Length: 339
Ligand code: GLN
Image (cartoon, rainbow, N blue to C red; front, top):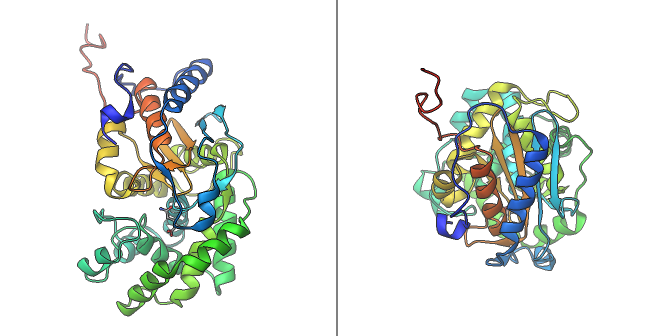
């Protein structure tokens, strides 16, 4: 979405390289961002996974969790939805933590494919390489690489790991899992294609099944904001105090999100919002302000790339109003540092 569509005309753009503003100020900004995005009802609820089409398009939750553990919530932040592609970011972080930077870099890659999240052509054009872990091919390859003797063990590692990011035990939505399993022929094809190129060493059908389960985990906007805040806080969950992954892993994961978190729209997103983020087709969107906060939105209407429309509008507002854009700076002269 372009600046005009993001409805940020009068928000202004400030640079803030220090701490986040005090709690009550964040509450007011979150409420204003929610009200602003609520005016917009463009986009459509995903229906290629049949059960997702039943989502209430009006649900809209917005939550910021800062690295001190402060929670700033507005709207339907307790409404549960399947995490979908947002799981890719956190499973990737778990894999990097287990295997290290180099190995994952080689096998999964870090470059944007410029194509849709479920593209088969992108795999072919890349000589069988999945491209990056935020598209389905790279996510299936990521899941296949996780440590564990069986698919069940790998699944339990994912469920437990994502639960540590969220700070509570996450559960699968069996209906979403069933609905997607009946309709995920394309992902199964991607799994087999990767196998044909020697990119998946374990059984591709099993890898796709575990990937489908991870996409079916239920979260709410508050959970997602805590998960994002953990990536913002060097890998320590700021609400539970538990270290989930290393600070190096957070840095690597956020770099990958900046390049590919919103698929083929990642460049536009970075240009307008200036933060790493990750979207999912159920309408979730998580954004990370490194060292500052996690932002999460849930609003099921999507743009044509599969990104929440209200989520993008609200996040653009927050990024500007809270001074979160990582590329923004003020001259040190204008701050009066050099008198
Ligand atoms: N489970 C979905 C799929 O594989 C996830 C896609 C998404 O959220 N973009 O198609």
